[in-house]
Image 1 (cartoon, rainbow, N blue to C red):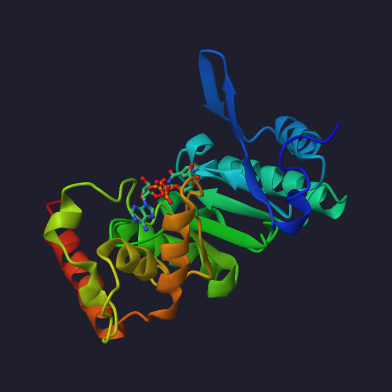
Image 2 (spheres, rainbow, N blue to C red):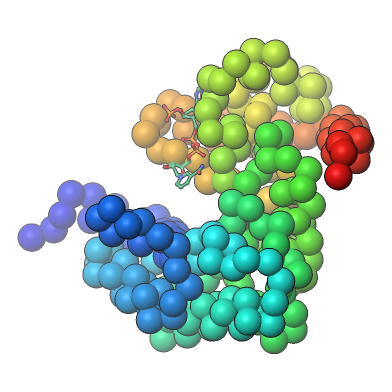
Length: 239
Ligand SMILES: NC(=O)c1ccc[n+]([C@@H]2O[C@H](COP(=O)([O-])OP(=O)(O)OC[C@H]3O[C@@H](n4cnc5c(N)ncnc54)[C@H](OP(=O)(O)O)[C@@H]3O)[C@@H](O)[C@H]2O)c1
């Protein structure tokens, strides 16, 4: 018997993540290639089809800084997901990282090259995360279309900060009718320059508003200024 929505699945491009294992009372990240493989296979069973893309979830959580051993562990994990893709268990693979600061240093020519990298995006991502995300994409020679953004609202579209900062200053005029939430989302496509942004689908009207925002363009000058201010603020902080 078909499960609810299964007739819709073929009409969507599906991406998911492996590498976080929420076992009862002991949720953990892992780069164990056997567990990653099993998770990809489970995803296939759950969906009734292969996902189009599988991200390795927050590998930095299992890697403490730079070392040859960590480079090796990351390479082995990447190879496991890459192999799953080669065997048709997913259309492609990627790396999703909440805090990619430690990752660019681990990437050399021996690591498999992902099809996509997903990172935090937007005005609240922070300059260190932005720069590390761009460095990570550059290490693999990924163009912006292969960089995906997540958490464009910094977790909440209603937190008090959004009442103090008008994100429409980062959008080219005219932007009559554009809401602050829409502008926040649109700006996330440029911080860092990303081809896709992950958002929730709970509310069709919210989703529609975010899609409508795609017709607006970011103001490159304001974004440059914003990044410069973030860098200056970081550089003023005591070491
Ligand atoms: N960010 C993460 O750390 C993370 C991690 C794993 C999975 N995910 C998944 O990724 C998806 C995106 O999550 P997210 O938290 O980054 O973003 P999101 O759910 O798209 O948006 C965050 C908040 O903004 C609201 N919002 C969105 N569009 C709006 C609009 N046009 N007007 C007013 N409010 C609006 C959402 O309300 P509505 O929900 O009512 O639209 C939600 O409360 C979700 O499915 C989430 O489960 C996120």
